[in-house]
Every structure is written in structure tokens, then in C-alpha cells.
Image (tube, rainbow, N blue to C red):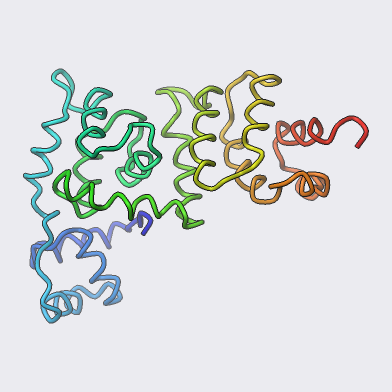
Length: 253
């Protein structure tokens, strides 16, 4: 399930529910949603179904885990700590599932987790140990097959991969991220797109180009689609996509 954004009042209801039941945030949100956000009904549902408080409510275990990876100088998990985190999860740092985890944590910066991002992210996932999270990896990986979740992760990846203080994504990083993301939702033209940019553009990628490429990739998947593509049907296509289409079609088209 993709990450759900709660309103302020809903967060207060989740906190109220947790205070009475000792449940995890994930359990609280599920019971409240099933009860149309009526706290009393949700609490009755929780106890009537014989539910027990989830292990993710053990905040101290998550904080201890955070301390294991925290940098010695800064109150954050930095690149070395993220590397150890991935090693304990038995996944390569370049594995796309680490991007899904970062999305759930709502991490602002690549290769870095703040204390709040890590603790709240683990709570969101209902995990308080590496073993819990490792067992959840297949479920997290499967979210990439869900069209809405994939789009949310794709859009999130842009800001996540930008260097601190930068509004545009460096081309080499964008290329690496496109190759990673489209390895899951295959786009046959991704290699040619990346080669086109590296040869003809050589500049940072705007958020508009990043976002609209996903829509383009859903429309144009084959050479036949390319020949039938009508750029005038959407006057808002970024110029890079227009230039890419023109180059692939050739001068005689």
C-alpha cells in the first residue's frame, strides 16, 4: 500500500487511538479508516477483533536501531550509515527497493535519513527491527507494479535525487535514476532517451521534463508509437521530448 497523507485532525485521532489501545500508527490508521474515522467505533473494532498492539509501537527499539546507524558527529544517518543499513537488510544500496523505503520514510535527501524520517518511517511501515523490515521487502518491491504507487515514487525520486540547494537534477543522476526506475516498468526507449540527452543536452533536467517523460513513456513505447505520436496534441510537451521525437523520426519524416 502506498503512503497515505493524513490531515491534522486525522493525525490527532490516530494519536488518541494509540494512547488508549497501545496500537501502532499503521494499526490505528487501518481501524480508523474502517470505522469512518470515528475513534470510539475504531477502538471497539480493535478490541472486538482481538487485535493486540503491534511491535512497531516499541519506539525505543526503533531509536536504538537509529543509534546503530547514526553518524558520530551529526544527528542523522549519513552515507556510511545508510550503507550499513542496506548491508543489514541484505540489499545492495543501488537496489530500487531502497528507493521505495526512502519514499516511505519521506527522506528529503539521497543517502541520508534524519532521526524523524527514520523513526517515523519505520513506524509507518510497522517495523521495529531489521528483521521486520527485511521480511517486508517483497511487499515493498511489489508496490512498483502498482501504477499509482509507481507514479508517486517516480515523482518523489526527482526531489530526493537533487543535490541540496539545487532545483534541477544533474544529468548523470537523472540518467541513473531513469535506468533504475524503468528497469521495473520497462520502457524500450529509455536507453535511446538517455543517449540522446548525453549527446545533445548535457545539462541538468528540469522537474517538468522529469514529470512529463513518464506520461510520454506510457504513450510512446515502440517505433510504431513514435511514428504515430502527435506532439501538437499536447502543446505543453517539454522541448527536449519534441527534439527527441524529431531525432528518432529522422529528417525525412
